[in-house]
Length: 313
Image (cartoon, rainbow, N blue to C red; front, side, top):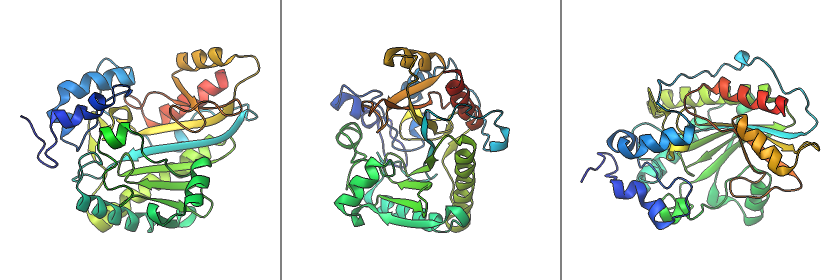
């Protein structure tokens, strides 16, 4: 009978995607901040297993790129580098539980904050439904734009309600700094570029996060949803903590088979996907390799895990 006060989310709403789509990897979504406290008996065990921890510690954040201790040494196998974080606004339902009116309000708040960015972060917001079919396809294949939501999020979790209204993408002129609005979370902040310059990509991400948070406080008197233990709160518990995924697209070394490569990455705390995202196969021998853990360590530590792992491989 428990319901959250903001979106009236129940335990049935939390587990709906897993019940309707049994092949779901996780099968639970939070409809708002309160879900993680009210239904902690469900979320905590899943969160611990996802992040490979026995206890959920106090979250510590470090967005200082100067704290990185090394860089990728052999840059030849690396095609591109990308760092992203997910964020939700405090005081609003998350995409699985938000109302149509509040979704549009969140879009307006984020559009204003994003278009306030300056320097190399400056860009323009594009509502999803203003993009042509060819523009969407080209941006998806280039890794700039999100795909149409799959059945896990759309039919199961209800995240795709009123699609594509209230969704959109922001990007700077060089398309090295982007933000997805109202996809799986309110905001997905992305820094990316060709090559293996992890420190440059991470630096741009950190500056973008801080600038957006500053704009939100100034213009809308709100900030990112945060909990002292769970870190930055997300729709899916896999993104709790830093909400960060630092990744590279890379060719498998000639000395390793695909199976050996994946096993090696797993032992180094790295996740391996196809270059076009989850549940995608490799394209031309190129894989997406990233940090696996997001909770229980800082942003700098997670980027360093990626760098150290790539150097080891």
